[in-house]
Length: 410
Length: 229
Image: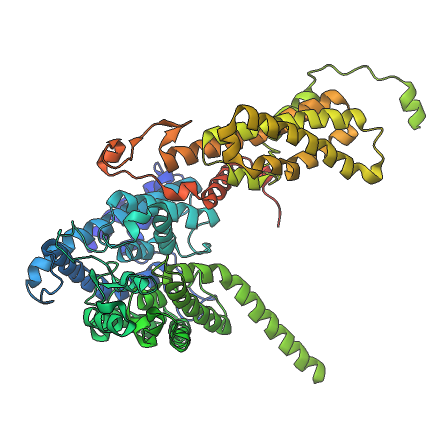
């Protein structure tokens, strides 16, 4: 480390104001502060908690994502093997290291492409606008690969990342100014731009699905979406007699609550394991980076909507236990890592609860009521991102009104 | 005072004076009807999927605005100001019907694609805006210049947006395939390498985003366009 520090100090004057390479200061600064605390930290004043650099906060989120990432790598490998053999019944822990290798081969390129394309855009804007590199992308660059289907072509990831950073963030003024979550913007872009590569039965497992009778790469949500149609299928097989009891039983066989909780189901790379998400959530809460209010109210909103759907219960999908809703798809991942994005979420304490609650409600509503979009969490969070400023506005206004009333009566 | 001014007869202005030229050039850039005044957005979003539609729409608006401006400018001293909006509407409506019938007669397929949006030129704010703001108070020649400038300003945005949308949304330009063909079984060009058309380009929101990016570029080039908050 001392060695690195020496090199940096030697070259620093060149990048300082008036130096030969002044123009490239943003690039230089970004790389040096990645390794060392910047010389310029606020000594006193504005901080409420501590003088932690934005980059350190972001690092904490990335650390919290590590369990999801590791589990995601293994899970991707497992389902790739399943797809190659056309057999869903391969023991989950068999051929451990082969699966790790297969998963790495899929996930690592996703991460590299996402970071490379995003950081290039950030560097270009940094040099044009003359500010240092915005750290926000450190987290977005990690989130993007985790919310992609394993089979997505790499060039699409690059296009989506560039789109999300430019249109989702830079156009509004860079990190901290964006209205919608950058990673979800990338996913939503792909979802609408290349629907055949982002949804359906053939994208969730890397590689080509084996041409075996009755084999399908569908996810839990994809199967559930068929429950609202005439032809109910679970994992490629038609449901016996097409009754709702048989459908629910077949569904529970393929994606039991325990499997969904551990994450042994197909899905986007890093979203399947609720345990891994909860580990990340614990780290975020301990370090004070994530908001417990949002996470909890998001879950409660989803759970209550699930109960409401059970009460209506006009098709087999509506009968899915409310708790099971929280375990499948990207619900936990979205609630913990996406909805809590400090920039795009509501800022006031009451606002956070309202924001989270309706996020959960909308997510389940989209899932169950609109089968065209099997997963509603992405759209729900983007929708609530847009609503967050309005929620905050009314929370602040009602607070002012209440206090004014108190003032008048006193 | 005003009588005196009227008596001293002003020398007639040359046809292409600086002022007249500005009437044409201003709406192209710094006073563009779409990107700066943000008028006529709905048609810009709806019909820019293909270059052909964008071009035909631009020509239709050019026709309506040009002849409308001339008519209103000729009638400007005869129109009672109380009912001027109705008179303007009558002028636009008759011109739009002419355009609509012409398109249906000679370009039936384009006319079908544009569907109601030709009829909706009546409600295009650019046209009523120019009538009200310019033709009602100016002579015929400046009104012609104004109509040309505004419809060209409208046209270049429309055509730029539709070029981008057709190129990336359908992989073609004016219906001519640029990137190859995505037809399953007989793919050629980029599509054999896994390239896919961007479906979002076909959806109207993408047009809004492209227009937004044009506005962004325009404002960052000319800081005077940025409003104070």
